[in-house]
Image (tube, rainbow, N blue to C red; front, side, top):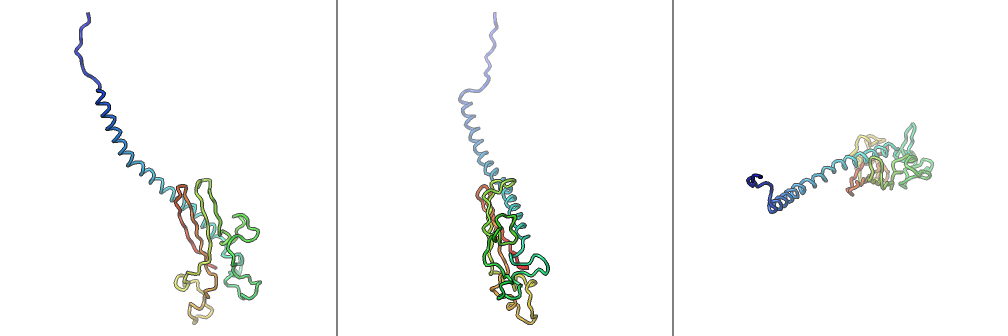
Length: 197
């Protein structure tokens, strides 16, 4: 004959299980609502660094080019601004048209800063997959060379007022604007100036 063992209660009741699941769900929802936005913000610095690297790399490439198509690339290094006689067409003053010159159909053929005007890539690919960029180059006459760059202003006559040394019609500076668009749509803007030197 089998002996009867005393009944011991083990486990949870159905009501306790339901209450436990509800409490766990509420706790998990609160914790995840705090963590998920942090995960999004964690990726932001990486996108910013990649955009900065891409923008700086492109800017370095552009700034390594000569100021203008008509600037000398070999000694005596006379720039288009410094050409002696503006009335002489053979002196080739600075270009009025900004953008690639005739025959320059790819980035490898670009030889001066303004060839990049309007240059854009919709997907940079490689390490920058999903990033896009656009380059705009303009002559910027808003720079006051007398106060911003006094060391580069050359006056033929030291007694001449410094404002008379650089006629405003001369195209001394090109402004380069690069807009890098990250995969999330955030736009990072980079700007530099290339002087005629």
